[in-house]
Length: 273
Image 1 (cartoon, rainbow, N blue to C red):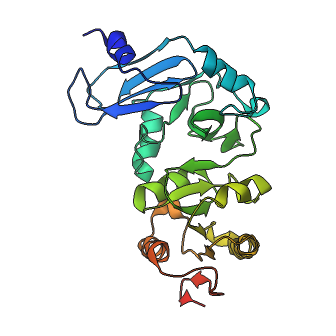
Image 2: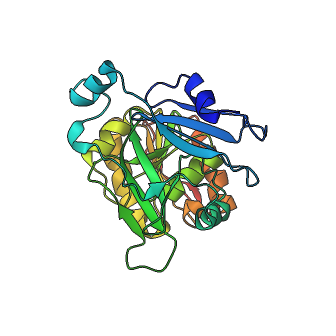
């Protein structure tokens, strides 16, 4: 089979992703392809399948205009082109180990591998375009997390009408893999005005920072409520990336509860106070 011809025939528009059965090994739902700013990339993440690669395609004049104007999909000053050392390689052992540890599907979250720095890279999208990325070290280093660009946007995992605000990208991916909510990672503990603007689009927001940041969780919850956002703070037993059963159950209850900003209650380990 001519895999490049197969990918081209998918007719992927810029920023569009395809996921389905692998045309080579025939395994179900293991094959992904994406048109990323004129680069067609594909990969089968079945361990026994060797299918992966990339090829260039031409951007249309309209796609180029969208990048260069304010009406386009991205704000040009915030755009980042990922270094060439960042590749798609779902079979890379360190990336696979991290995904296995936290129960993540690398294709679902478009994870990459930084060959030079040995980091698992989480691309940050805005309107379907990569505007930044964060990398998690897999070897001992003084800097566990690295931000590759300067865009003031969060890492968001999943498209849902409820957002769970967490600190890091792994926790955001775990949230989206575990409950019916988008994981919204601040990439730290600082709530920016850009974050607030994006959180307005959600039906409900749950602030669930790490247990040692509970004071900030409450502070941010009150600030978001002041903006008219249906928001609650969770007091966690552990970081959500570790999937502590009581935390996950409480999170599921809050997502589905019939409560709103009229209530002054804040969910904690002991219930609603």
